[in-house]
Image (tube, rainbow, N blue to C red; front, side, top):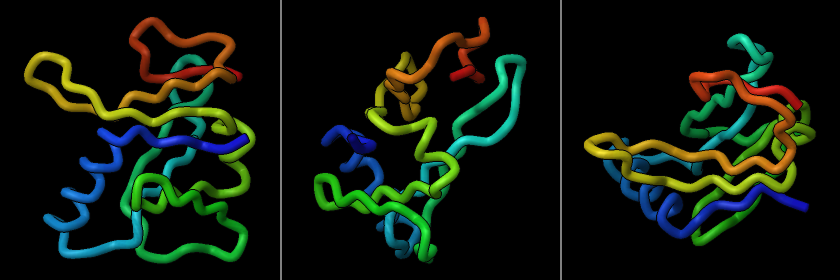
Length: 107
């Protein structure tokens, strides 16, 4: 399996990298946080580690560290508009439960 990226998310990342002035792509991972156990972390990536997994999707590099890959395998990252807000949306088939606010999850 893999981590997927929608075309809409890829376009947003490309625009953001251009506005930022460069970068290799987007790093997606998990961190211990919240009431359910884990939360997503997202950041621009300038360096790829030797153990990182890199997916090239719609012309964008999506980088995942080995510890996070277990939690994210099979996930799709989308970019959506919710009213006036724009956010990355994580469609993760591995989630067993999610907190009420939607900020953290458990596998």
